[in-house]
Length: 329
Image (spheres, rainbow, N blue to C red):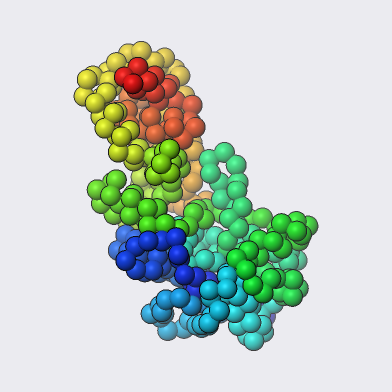
């Protein structure tokens, strides 16, 4: 019987992250970044779990095979070689690789990639951004026949092989997001903008001219299982201030009076469909309700409509807000 093997690469230096600690140790909603990634891999229940460490020591739980990479500074490929070596020694025919700085990759993605048909030498995860599927590519399953083809040094990892040999690659559509934590801004600015640690998974959907988070795309369920009706959340400080002023001057009533009701209802329906499509396929629990900001009809929150508009949504209220803000400039 084939040994279902998974490996988490957690060896890099995280040099772009300028916080007081390594980025993998930075807290994210009550636990370090790396623990979210490890929990997702563990919950997929592979037969063998490998973690490749390097720049920073991790307090790994029992049952994990740790491989220290003394050459971690030479690039991700050296960590990939450590993972492949551990899989080879265990007699595995493939290994599924993930990254410790991608806390929004769920266990379902690990499981879907690991359990894909064995005739494919390379299996990669894809994630839907609301309009099309984008390659993660992590987690990525690498069959034994690909191991001699992988680079031994550098930061490319398996990407070069994936790009050079598209006929070897099978894509699996997955829930979640492969957005990684590269800078302290990605982690800390969102908490600062929200005034609290995020209670659910999110990704930065739109950045402003200073490359700071402007709009967040939320998961449809919070970490405690509670539904999150607001898919797009306005986070930029200046935008929040300007839209709040517009609301305070009677903007909600004015927008509802000026936009076409049928067009607004259609926008609510599109928003709900996009949000609900991000729920796990086998989910049977409480679901988010309503359209923009959980509203079934009319206008409730200009911030939510504007965020949807900025993220590319066809929203008449969002367009109305954008026009009013331009007039104020």
